[in-house]
Image 1 (cartoon, rainbow, N blue to C red):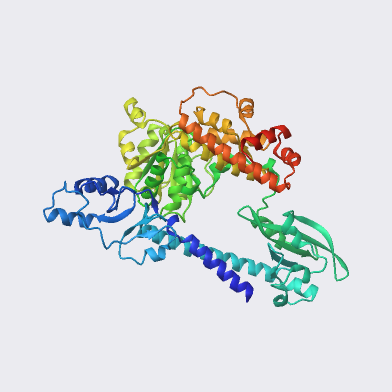
Image 2 (image 1 turned 60 degrees about the horizontal axis):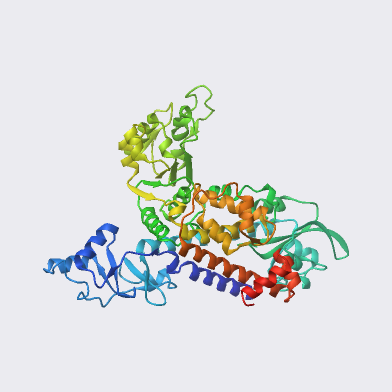
Length: 599
């Protein structure tokens, strides 16, 4: 009963966190100030395609809301469009807070509500579509959890091997019939007790602490030497428990099933692809994975949220390495097609002779070498999902004509086929080329450009959002250190300042590549300016003079360096010699830094 109550409590907490308004709202909405006019309010609603605007005072605090309906009412009554917003009645309006539930927000009879922080300042807007989206995703998540629970239950019941599962405290959570019969303890008596009270000579509780898997070790139980496996269970980078398997006749299907489902996060880092490739292959990217707090990035996120919920074809533009595919995947996750596949096509990597068969598919016998049964095209594979046409500017003119016809008619036909199939996929295209210039040069069709460019999302280059570089350094350094299972590294203020000043022609892709190089090659836990000179192949081609930005970066670096020194000293009990060794610096240098930070 205790286990069930704890499970229900955890599920309730997860639900409350998952359904908070802060995760589903559109941040940084357009607002209207008290000093602005009714006419300006109408112009803003038209420009941002919204049906209401929060009214804010000089401190950005919410004082009311003006809807399109209310605005029309005032103008129809003869109110001058130049009249100040201030006299407009702003009482009797509703709003929600960041940590309110979307279920609470849905109880109001309004299509959208302003969201305020603890200071009553407007930080977002939430629409009924976003509320429904969040609730549907929670229901889908529950269904997946229920299915996973049923699968685990079947495996445990049918397994011939003894299987025991403990939580992070070593308390038994699952105990199957095979183990129960062997040790002579009933399942209901085992669950909820510490594993040492149930299984003789067990080491499963230590597996949780050490996070080290043990396979094929000998354990004496009931006077017999038995072969056991002990494997830690990981979630979100932490060990949340361990599974123990008592092998009677060697490894059977249960263990094979387990190995295929449970990803061991402590595998050899040499077998892993570069971090940049992992980012590219990650199909579950959300807007939260797009790092940045600059005005440019906030605007991109706002535009992406709005575009995702429409059926309109979208064109993402920007230099190579700015994250066009990440934005496309974020749109897919936020769209009504989120449960469908995300199919990516690099239009510049497929030979012209094969492009039509790749995009539209072919029937059996359509040409020499056509495989038996034919082949599905990318449009078919993307049905009820998203088709991402990357590097659309590289598409041959002949294929541009065929693609235009498909987009207009919303149906396609396989090579060698005589029956058309409907297109039920969201189309997102991307390019790093100036398509308007390509139109002038005759290498891109103008009518296709306007068909693709219903909504355009222009991504800024890294040099246009340099305030985000310290955040990007911090975020990706943590992720890469975690991937390679090495101690987290920090940068000196001077190193951050140099990286902020550096020209980044390869944008975020180049920055992540540099971070991965520094993290893997620098042995010390602190990366300084000498390491950057050593491991970067070229020096900055141009220096942008932004003293306030550099100082901001340096301040961030100083704070992280100070925090790391404090944490290290705490870990070694104040022993400065050991702290210096762990930090990878000389003891004299540590004393200098202690003096510098007044520690």
